[in-house]
Length: 101
Image (cartoon, rainbow, N blue to C red; front, side, top):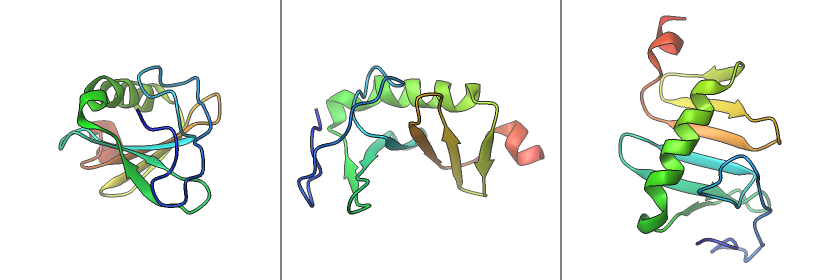
């Protein structure tokens, strides 16, 4: 499990929103390719999560992203802020209702 940034060694703050990935205030995920990153708030570098911890966390992030009422999306990137302040960054094709809007 990630606990600190691989680049600047800053400890990741905890979050309560994603139980399978309890660290990081900004989490990026690519559901199509099975990738999950914790973004360091200090140096803004992306830290790839170990493969054995990714799948449940990716599913939880995708579910939380879909459940948010307010989100911002472009063609390949979506942003959502959860109730506890955790930010989710969705990488990949937009959700059907986002694409239609």
